Figure 1 (cartoon, rainbow, N blue to C red):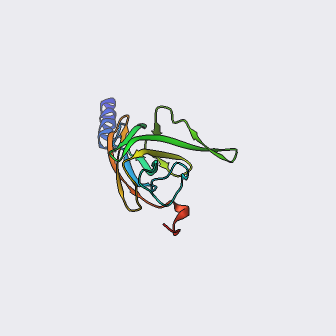
Figure 2 (figure 1 turned 60 degrees about the horizontal axis):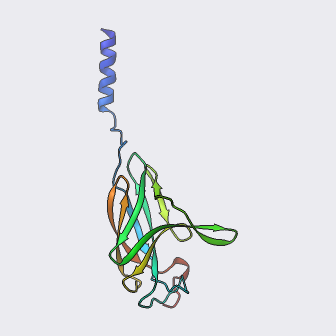
Figure 3 (figure 1 turned 60 degrees about the vertical axis):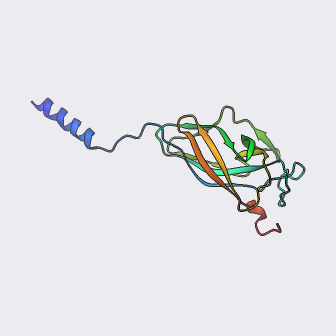
Length: 164
């Protein structure tokens, strides 16, 4: 009888406890922004001419789920191609690092896409991105599927207040 009672207490305790969040969840994208489009010869140009090469996109990507997820691709109707890149500073120089088959977003964690780190390279854009424009981007995750985000075009932080 004592074993049955103890088993019943354990079962009731397990049933009343908090639900374990062990499955995948849809990643959350916040603070999404992009730089104005840039010319090939001036990668951080403030002025944005038509026909410029591209733009960089930054955001904080949070994974509220209980398993790691991976950002595997991105696309935008405003760019012919969106690459997931990593800038690595080595020996005082910046180099393009390899993200392999994507960027892992840890369970209950986040990855910050920021200048001199992870970024989305929006290439061959359909026109200039001016400060204040909103650029739609779809991020595709291994488990979370497609997540639509809007990237606001902002000035690079270290150029804020400079002439446009």
